[in-house]
Image (cartoon, rainbow, N blue to C red; front, side):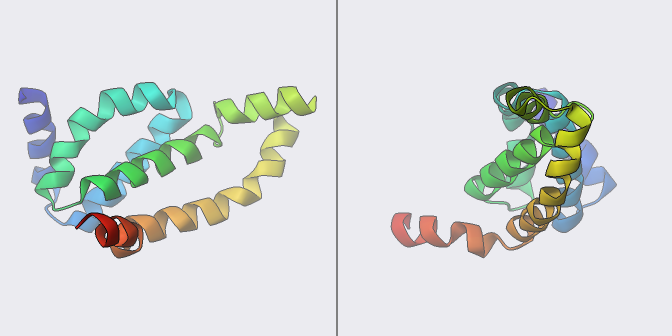
Amino acid sequence: TKITDNVADVVLAITDKPWIILLLVNIFLLIVGCFMETIASITILVPVLLPLMEKIGVDPVHFGLVMVLNLMIGLLTPPVGMVLYILARVANISFERTTRACAPFLIPLIATLIIVTYWPGLVLFLPNLFYK
């Protein structure tokens, strides 16, 4: 549609390097994941971002995993971090204490996100093995 083409054109006008586009999309999805429900984010953003990813040569399965991982990390990231509020409520501790307790886990999650984003062969090994 027109919106997806416009989004792709705007992003490709900024840069045509796939690694920079993936970085920008990761940052965008992390921010979206902080404020929006995962299902709503996927429903709204996949039709907009998937054509862009296909234009730069990113496999749809790879993009799906990158998107879900970004949104999951966003759920654990303040200021909203919906999962943090649930954890604080269930554990009967303050939101701040929950945030401090979960913060160290963000480092390996971000490292995993970087590996998954920039090493698609790792993600696509099993799907390619079984379905191609």
